[in-house]
Amino acid sequence: NAGVMQNPRHLVRRRGQEARLRCSPMKGHSHVYWYRQLPEEGLKFMVYLQKENIIDESGMPKERFSAEFPKEGPSILRIQQVVRGDSAAYFCASSPSTTNTGELFFGEGSRLTVL
Amino acid sequence: AQTVTQSQPEMSVQEAETVTLSCTYDTSESNYYLFWYKQPPSRQMILVIRQEAYKQQNATENRFSVNFQKAAKSFSLKISDSQLGDTAMYFCAFSYQGGSEKLVFGKGTKLTVNP
Image (cartoon, rainbow over all chains, first blue to last red; front, side, top):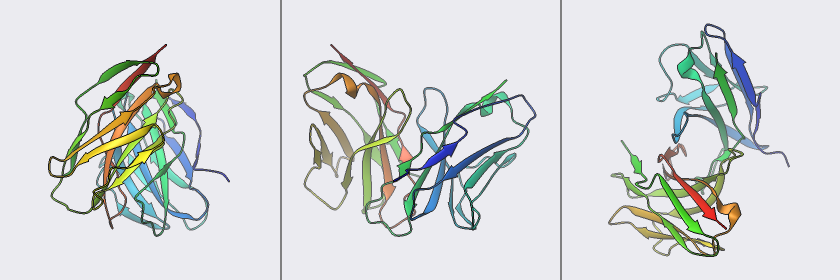
């Protein structure tokens, strides 16, 4: 019973390159959330998606960041023209379409290092 | 906006002893969930315990229990019989009930259990 799968686990990019992080939610889950964790900080909400829809992107930086969750395939968080400040751990979480627990299930995170 | 405050950046406890981690939150909502998540060095986010705001009874999960004071907006975590494997970052989190399950996290408390 696979949990939330994120890849790559580690990604190194040079300034100005693009980073793509992938997340496959748990089986049966149709809601995906992306969080960013800076060093020594808590997790900050970035975006909440359902299949083919962005529901809440209030935590996404206005530029260079985008996210999608297509009908088929994983959710993708895309960071264009990365800068050193983008270095962080990016966590994906999922939940079922209807939940009465409020719980999110997290992946192991993708650590982005920008040189 | 909702905020979650963890006032103890670091704590330590001797193995087998009891420790309490503090958390306060601010919201105007009456129906919500509160959570404690554990993040060990592997960085996986693991749910420790959850509490529904409408329930007066404090949640317990084995050695973990909470002291939920709704009027004071306080949600502390008590770990009894601390074990070396409890060493981790602990994050308090909040989400609306009936909403998008978007979690708002505190900055975390780094707990070290000493042998």
